[in-house]
Picture 1 (cartoon, rainbow, N blue to C red):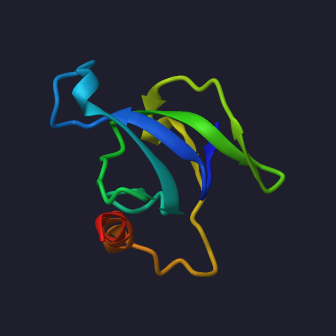
Picture 2 (tube, rainbow, N blue to C red):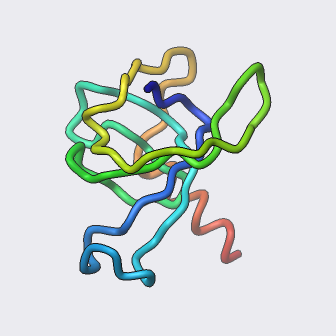
Length: 103
């Protein structure tokens, strides 16, 4: 399976015990760089190592965001293709997006 910009992922924040519902998060993918230590830049500003399990819950298909049944698997098991064009997106962009939500 591939992970692309705009896909929405669900995962458990690694600061919580596995399966703790308080740690369940959803975020969209802003950028992908498989060679980076943190391969995905997420909209909520969280940084996940490549061994964290994520599930795709919505994916971009033909320019539309559609529901996806998804299965939890480590990020490193996904096909990660580096984004091009405006690839200047980094983890700070996710933090700024989340901060804007709070005003």
